[in-house]
Image (cartoon, rainbow, N blue to C red; front, side, top):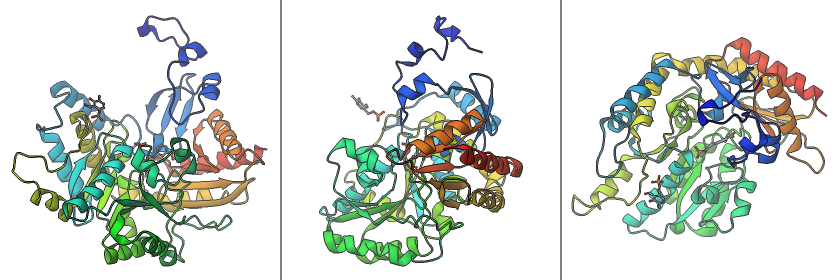
Length: 452
Ligand code: PXG
Ligand code: PLP
C-alpha cells in the first residue's frame, strides 16, 4: 500500500526516491534508507505504525525519550492548550509562568542541593554545551580563569555540538571535525567482552576512577574546569559504572576543586528507576544535564540543573541589577509549549508511579536480555534499569554491518531496536508488559541465530 501526501498537492508516493531526496537525514545511512525507507506514520502506547500499516514495537522508546508510551492524552492536551493560549514568548528579558512552574517541579525531583534550572534550546547537545560554558564561566567569575580544560571519557556521548564532541569519546563523531576545544579523557569503563555483568559491576570502580588522578597530574587542577560523565553511557553501548566509580570521581573532584557534571540526557526522569541517575547511583554532581524523557519526547526541552553555589556566584558578581549575569541562552530556551509538555510529563511520572514500575520491570528485563547469552554472535550483554546493550562479534573488515543487519531483520519482524558501533541497544518503554519484554528478547534471539 502506498500513501500520497495529498496536502502537498503532489501525487508522489511517500516512498519514491525522488520525494525522499531533499531531506539529508541525521545519523542515518541516507543512500540505504532512501533505497529501502522505514517510514513511521502513527504511534500509540508502545507501538508505531509504519507506512505499510504494520505495527512495530518501540524497543528504544523513540530515541530513549518516550518511556511513558506514545499518544499520552494528558501531554497532548497540555500542549494543545498551551499552543492555543501562548504559542511563543521571548526567552530573553521576558518570561511566562510555565518555565517557573516547571523549574520548581524539576528541582523538587533533584538530589538535594541541585536547585536552579537553566533551560537550553531543547536538545541534549545544547544543554551539554551550556553546562560546559557554565563551568568555565564559573571559574572565571571566581578569578580562576585558567581553569578551562574539560574532561570527558573514552566512549562517552555528549551530543554533537563542539563542546560535546570535544569531551565525547565516540571516535566517529569527532574525527571528521578537526580541532575541538581543550579537553582530556578518562579511561573507558567498558568491562571486557564475556563479562556478562548483570546491572552494576561490583569491582574496581574506585581504581578506574583514579584515572582522573593521572589527568590531574598531566594538566594540573589549576587548568581543569570540570569533569563530565554519563551516570551510565547509553549511545556508547550501555556501559554501566562499577560500584564506587562515581563516588570516587566525586571525591577526587572535591579534593582538587573541579566541578562534576552528570549528563543525564538518557538516565534522567525514569530510565534508572529513579528521578535521576544521581539518585540511583547515590552521587550528587554540581550540575546535571537533562533532555529527552523530560517531555516524553513530545517537545524538545533540555537544560542544566546547578547547585545553589554556582547560581549564587553569578548573581553576586552580576554588577548592577539590570545587567546580565551570564551572556548565554537560546531563542527556544524554555519554550512555553515544551514547558507545558514537561509539566504534564513530570506529573504523569509521579501520578502513575512510573519509577516504581521501572524498578519492578527491571529484573524481568535483565533476565530476558541475559537469556541471550549463548545466542549467535553475542560477545557481551550489559544492562541497568530499562536499558541494555549487546556487543556482537564483528564481521571481518566490516565492524558495523552485523548490528545493522540484525536491526533491519528485527524491523521486518515488527521490532524497532537501535544499532550503533558493535552493539544492539534496547530501551523499551516503561509501560511495556512483561510479555512484550519477553517477546522482544525472544525475537532478538531468533534473529541473531538466523544472521550470518
Ligand atoms: N548526552 C547524552 C548522554 C545523550 O545520550 C545527548 C547528550 C544529545 O542529545 P540530543 O538531544 O542533542 O541528541 C544524548 C543523546 C542512541 C542515541 O541511539 C542517543 C542519543 C541521541 C540519539 C541516539 O544511542 N543521545
Ligand atoms: N544564528 C543567527 C543568525 C541568529 O540570529 C540566531 C538567533 O537569534 C542564532 C543563530 C541562534 O539560534 P538559537 O537561539 O535558536 O539557537
